[in-house]
Length: 181
Image (cartoon, rainbow, N blue to C red; front, side, top):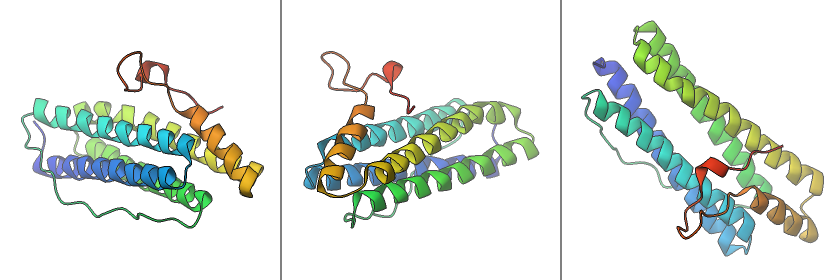
C-alpha cells in the first residue's frame, strides 16, 4: 500500500507526463504548420510515448489501490522562433522530468517503499535515453545549421528517427523504436 505522500507524488508525475504529451503534441503541430513533416511525425510519436509513460503510472496506482487524480495542466507554448529553440525547450523539459523522477526515486527509497523504488527504475533508464536522444538532435541541428537548406536536412534527419507505423495500424511499433546513434 502506498503512503499518502507517495500517492500524491506519483499523481504529480502522472500529470507531468500528461503535460509532456501535450507539449510535444503542440510542438508537432507547430512543425506541421511550418511544413517540417519529419519533425512533426517525430514529436507526435513522442507525445504518444509520454501518454504511455502516464498510463504505466496510472496502472501502477490502480494496482496498489491508490486513487489517480488528474489535474489541470498549463497550456503549452504554441509558437517558436526556430526549430533549434523548440528542441532546446524539449531538452530542458526532459531535464525537468528527469529531476522529478530522481526525486520520486529518492522519496521511494527514503520511505522505504521498495516496490515503488523498483517500479521507478524503468523511468530512470528511460530518462537517460530521452536526454541523450534530444541532446543528439540538438547536436545535429548545430552541425547541419539552420539556413534554409539546413532546416530541410534537419527535418529529414529527425524524421528518420521516428518509428514507422506498425503494418495496418497507423500506430508506431514500440518494439522497433529508433535509437539515436
